[in-house]
Image (tube, rainbow, N blue to C red; front, side):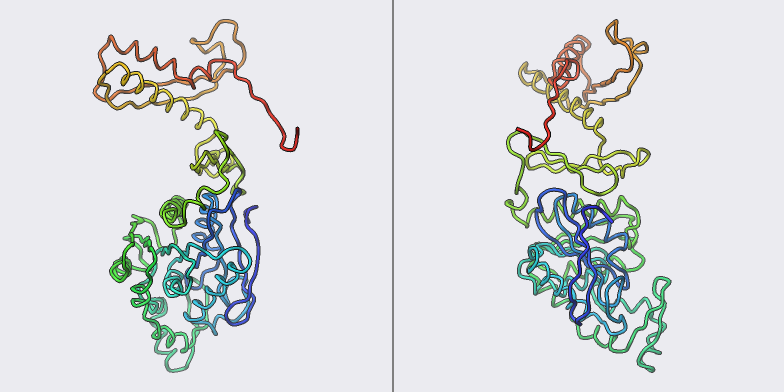
Length: 409
């Protein structure tokens, strides 16, 4: 469990204790969200854990919980249905409202997405609603045990296999699904809606996204997840969903939440997220970035490494400096791109190093490309100007780093 995950519990709609995790940012919380997992899954399913963790890294606190009878929650699954799932969701909202802050973002995956759509109208504080691979009709869930429906109707219940596990499904579960008009709930939602769905989803077909989109009123958005699978088992797909969600929801949760406790002046704040071994949350004014190490170095590879950021600074400064020079001189300079390669080499192997250097040195090789090319007589001048970039000068000069421990005078 992430160091920034808080283990909690609350009472569900049927009176049972439900297990939950609250994934929190390392810094200030921009807003809270609730994530509802898929049918027969748990709060610990990969897609829920990965997206919640990534959203926390982006400043959003996310509550994910096990519905009654699933995961570590109490109660009997056989006694639950879609209505009880919706009621459990509203219990989670009530818990957040009383103990933290009512969720401004509601997120649901698969049948959890359908439950979110059914419950969202009863959460006045919710500013944004998002579904991931969600069905347009709650009864879609019966496709997973279609062959058992007759037996359930005749005997009142049956044990079915779902995802390699056995579950007791009762007739009341099937009957309850027919009581829900999800299309009407979607039409009456009147909240910004984001629909994320993979065209090749083999569990919940892409046509469901179209039905939800058609039923919803604006503002509504659709994002294709390309070749992702239903459970978003590839890490990059889950991270992409989290980044899209955070960027989209930022339009609706308000500037005051997004800008809360930003560092004063030009200070940059870097703090551990608790995700992985090295992942860092970087706050620079209103900007949120992620720093990490490659997987080969024990990191999650979720962001540039510290030396990558150093190379980024040199490349960006170089390009900006050349553009300023071209504008000042009235030069028609095509789009500039800069490639920076960083290596640690021994001074004796560094032909550009000053004599007398010993040991290892950091060597940055900078390649400047200008679309459309430049005249030969201008190339030398541009290389000279690139050398005047402030970051270049900082790297080549002897900088001073002053370290203080918080709490000192």
